[in-house]
Every structure is written in C-alpha cells, then in structure tokens.
Image (cartoon, rainbow, N blue to C red; front, side, top):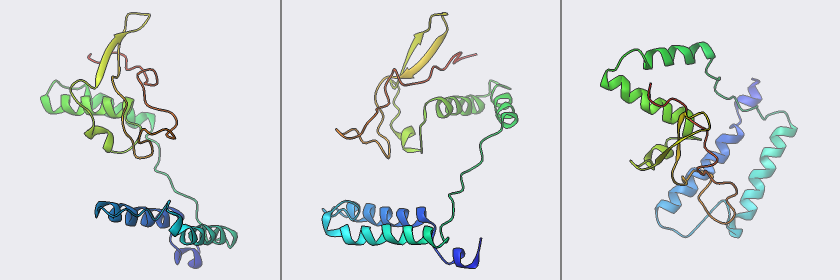
Length: 164
C-alpha cells in the first residue's frame, strides 16, 4: 500500500461510518435518514464523488475478504464436533450445523431462531432434512415490497443426517 493510499479511509469504512451515524440518529428516535433523505442528497453525492475520485487517482484499495475455510480445516472441525457426546460439544455441533447450513450473514440471524424455527422433512431417498419454517429478517432484507428474494422453506439447503 502506498503512503497516499494509507492516508485515505477505505471505501467501505466511509460507507460504514455514514451507516453508523444513521443508526445512531435512528436510535435517538429522530426522523432523519442521512443515506436516503433528499436533504442529504448533496452530501451523498459528495461522498460518491470522493469515492470515484479516489478510484481515479489510484487511492482506492480493493476490499480484502477473509480467507475461505480450507477443506482440511473443515474436516478438523467436523472431527472435533463428532468426537464426543459431551453436552458442550453437542451444543457446539448444533450451532455449527445451523450456522453452516442456514445462516446467510451475521449474528442477527441467531437471535430470531425459536424452538419452532425448523421443519423436518424426508427427501425422495427417505433421508431426513431440515428447513426454516418462517422467513428471517436480515440486515439487507427487511421484508418490504422492494426487498427482492426472501429466505423461504424452498430456498433452504437440505441438511442431511442431522443427528448421527
């Protein structure tokens, strides 16, 4: 990273700062949205211009994503989770299976789970699988008219052999 790049906030940092300020304003029960209200259009156009100018000048850095868990590490995790029937390991195993097969993003998903959040079915080979019994609210999907795709029972991946 060049010295010039190191003096600039990353593009996601700038967007996240704006979103955090917006959340704080919302939490204070103020009817202001600095991201979408027309009164803030100029400020948002300025931010947009700044991000474009940084890209143009070579000051923008690509987003670094976390590395994918390797197959070897997944096998180690799986081996540990099925190594014992200890109640603590069983709890980890349940959380891991839910997180790997159903969680689409973030921790907000876990808070919405209830005892009746899953339905259990059998596939054409008589193998049991689980799917969500209700739609889940997500950070980028709140459930309105313009929300696009939903997380439905049909959209869930099958979770074969839930209990070994």
